[in-house]
Image (tube, rainbow, N blue to C red; front, side, top):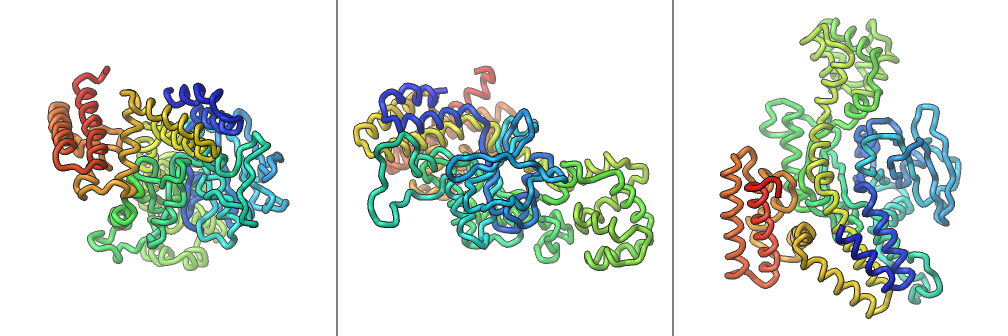
Length: 511
């Protein structure tokens, strides 16, 4: 990879401290994409993390563990390590239920974060970072999140003096933050997107020298979609999922261009169906409920209290467990599935519940936005980290040397994807002002890996896609030369090149 070669080439030409930072950048380039799951407290982040991993391992009840950053990554042996502020590590046993203990029994003020290693295929391609909820009661949780994700700004010591940068080859805070952050963000919202969610999203920078997360490396999910009242959403026709989809579209308009999309999901059902929480015993209990009189069951499903307190053949404790795994929406959905197909097996019921959760759509979007362009996202983050490391060195000559090397790299044809990501970031952040229709086109071309989606013509034939790509390539080249400001012209040249490469790819898929 060109960025890796740049780091190797520069290491002997920079200070020991900067070289150590480059080594960390290289390590990150060789690892899987790191995705931070962020959002407000009680938004269901940890439940969604469990669903994505396919194992109920992240604590979902409020406790010490939920106030810490936890990194879930692939390992050949399942283990949990507590990483202390001073670098010490302590192995932590899993709780009896297979989860990370909610209470650690140590002073968490001394803890940096938790590393969880799991023999899990999903984690071979993606490290998932579970973060404390924004709005946590203590500022320390927020600070730990900022430190690990790279959002914390470099601060001078309390005495107002300059931070000491001499006499140590260890990374300083600025350098560590520059290389330690997540490269992509999955932001979790619930029904009400608050005005400061935009600011919250900006706080979760993608290890890119304080560049804000944008549509190339951030998507959002509307969690707890089953709790939306359909009558509160115009056009839903009384359908919960339709209401959630319409609300997601409204939220996408609010959060863009911070995120590529907002997708509805029911994290609780996804977790239960995907992590083995839904059992044959649960299926049998649901089968008994399906045999009840319609009017009685409808009354029971009005509220959780009525559902668990009603006198019926299914034990109250069993019904409580069903609520904890599926909530009322999931129970109703499963009962309807059984009534539609009385012979349905527990396995088929689990798959239907998984389909109803919306998790698969989220995974597909993660694959399109993140996985398919992981190398480009990581490379862009790495370049920004390299820039931040050079800037933090305090040596003007070193800073110029790194700057010149990056400019040479970006001038090469193979660096076009990095140029496109840079152009996308400039437009999304407002650093380059573009007319709204052109901004939307830049975001579309730069935020998708699928050619049909990039061209805004999903499902079109290859000849139509090729013709459209060539036409838009010509238009952007003309715009770059006539009528664009210098800043717009630089973006336009990149977009022109993107369309031309898409046209080439359509004509010759092997190129």
